[in-house]
Image (cartoon, rainbow, N blue to C red; front, side):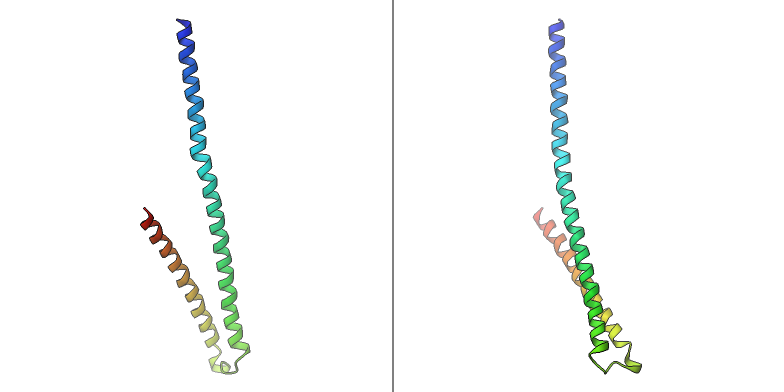
Length: 108
């Protein structure tokens, strides 16, 4: 009777070891992949944001320095142009997000 008890105990221990390794395999691996995905997404978002800021500032500075048209009462126009450039970048970002959402929905 004790041999059967040890055999059952060994089977239960083997089951627990197998279950633990399966759970680690199915959770740790995908979480590492998700971490890389999030890291690259954040890095890309940061690069896009910095580029948008610099290009907006470049548009404002170029209109202020290279043209004499926007002086005096028209000095606000370069700033409006900067807002337009920023809105264009915002719209491009929203389009990219929507397109990615559609692509994922279609893949299902």
